[in-house]
Image (cartoon, rainbow, N blue to C red):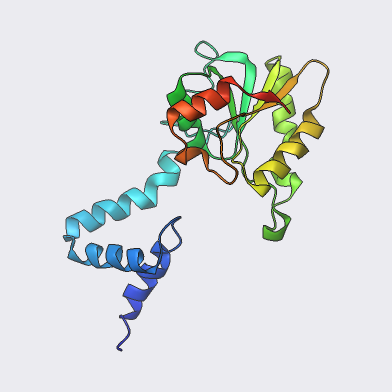
Length: 199
């Protein structure tokens, strides 16, 4: 069976890096791109090339910003006494859709995973501690996926952030083990947030 041209193979390999995209789906996408017009491809390529510069993470909370402004750090709109720690900026929008949380957010860069070379130093716990102190946070909600890495990171943060003045909780019932927050429906996520338990 003849092989695809090398450039097409490279495109397929790049597409397979996306989560949930296997070989067949990557091939289908690649052939779809071939059928696009030059203007469409140029526009799409431009979007990809500029996305990190146009929507950078907030230097304070790690959420996505637009034109340098972070809507989640505005003290006039948020309750600074609670801080929700998440593993992905995408998860912030899942929590926001529930309308059950009006506090501050903090997105960690990685969950702990020594096998993948992700260690405690990369969590930048000092930044979290500074935000707790500056905002006089009374509750820290740890909202990681229910996975081995999520559980390990949650326990590590609990030990590091334990303080007489700070209550540490974690999302409660309704979240299946191994589940990802962006796959949980809004009602289930809202109940888990409302019924969070002390960690």
